[in-house]
Image (cartoon, rainbow, N blue to C red):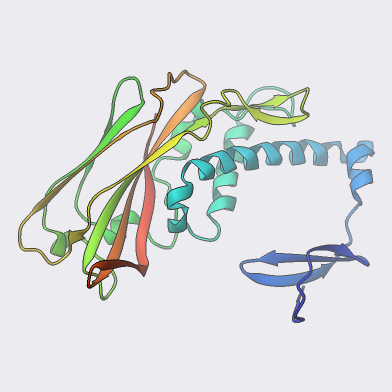
Length: 264
């Protein structure tokens, strides 16, 4: 595998060489696999077509979750998307039916996502050591996160230079996915609910205060939707550290984390 060092970076195939980007680097390698036509039609590649179909469906479900949490996706690491797609592929592998068309039923496999960190290199508990409570209403359209009587200068572990901390509750809906014979691809069972979300943030809280602080974050999905058994609600808690300069607050590098606390 070689690096591209020219001023113009290429992407795709040319002259038997594949050009692509990985982890911010522009790379090139010799293409020695079968062409698209052979993969699409040759009976010997039936298993490949099945795998491609299910991987594509898992990637689509992963994209729905990332779309729901787009306002806070900056807290994720560079490989969050691939890790998430891998989890949805595991869920897909547990489904019944014909290979290549097995359903992706997050509604039946909530545990696969619980406690997932958006940044595998920086956990929420490494930045905040106190306890919190995450709850939800019976209809699943509203949730709360409560942090009670916490001394921030002891429990909030921000990077050097931190003056303030902010907590976030992120709420998102992801539909189950099934293979659509008409579209020839995976599609959400509940497209009108898939990706629905709301983000709630606390005020900027000083990290050097001497008095305990309580934080309550209440969130409600917009439009008062009616949620059925084909969708799952994902509840996340996040933390971000800032440095105050005059009246402005600047986010600090290495000063944020987001994790999934409940899926219901």
